[in-house]
Image (cartoon, rainbow, N blue to C red; front, side, top):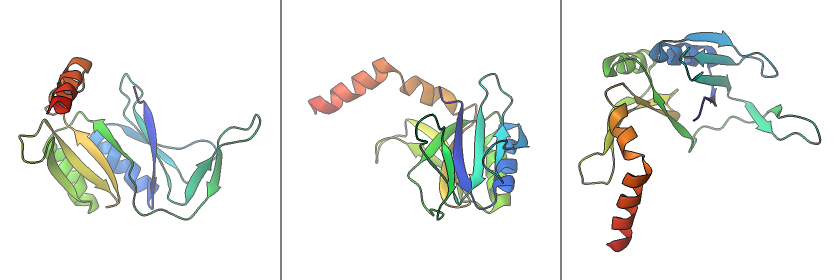
Length: 162
């Protein structure tokens, strides 16, 4: 279970506000060694949270007994990272937040090209550079049914046989 992730943003507080809105959560300043960071907190039973740091912050491992060390670094424009975030709001709410923020926001089907989608997500492109896949309550069951060991084992055994 992933309880929180951190992402970079050029406007951390505005990003935190938008994400908190679709999570029906709240925003708090990030305490600790990352000045200018914010947290979008869902308040759900899992402790779901997204930490949003200024885009010029990077982490490096500490040495000896030292914990993670924040440092200043050149911002990175594009990222391979993404996360699937389940939210308690409907598709139109997510789309409206994306439009208001000026972010690319699009309903997408996931699966094999040319075949019926296995599940759907909304691509929410935070600041038009970092993707958060958003799943509304209606979208979660199809994903959850798919990502189970028996289903995956059957799928991949059929792929190997072909």
